[in-house]
Length: 242
Image (cartoon, rainbow, N blue to C red; front, side, top):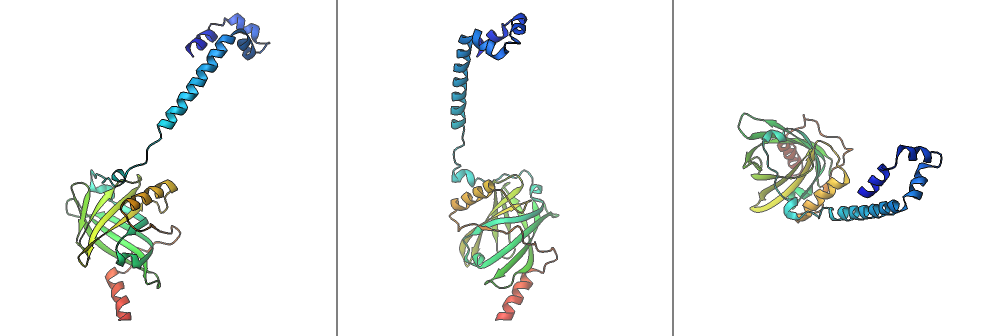
């Protein structure tokens, strides 16, 4: 390539003027056939090397260890604000009986250090009956920059995993009747993610050996922040039936 560049640069101004009416491109090819061959060889080598580099630079599939690596929080304030539920999965039989059509949560500060208040708003149904809106709140405390714990309703711990920049991926573990269960929830500032982001989440679900992903419908309205407390909704539900 250097030889080709030097040869072309070596053409005098007079030669370039002379070749103007002849067609500069063909004049160069006719008078510098050797240079042209060098140029073709250099281009072929360059293209071949580029293809090899591109092929070699393709990222290998991430391992489950990488996909489930905890996210280190420098500041719990990173979790503040409104988040929409995009998808989730759980191995809890109880949770799998509850169908959720939409959900969102609001994370706000508290007076306690490294503790946030989380208000959840669910549009859900039990046994395929009418969907109802409900809310419940609990405080989460940050430990070791990546683990959150709460003791509302049932004690649980949560770890944030790496995910898309405007998302939260929450892996939660809890106990029901003395048995351990886990759930994973994908939250985002958006209500709908792209195909690559969803595929990454599904791989994380597979790594945890959880049931197939449940995806929220982004077209369904979210519950208002004035929704009744979950305890009251459940009390009414069971009182009417039992």
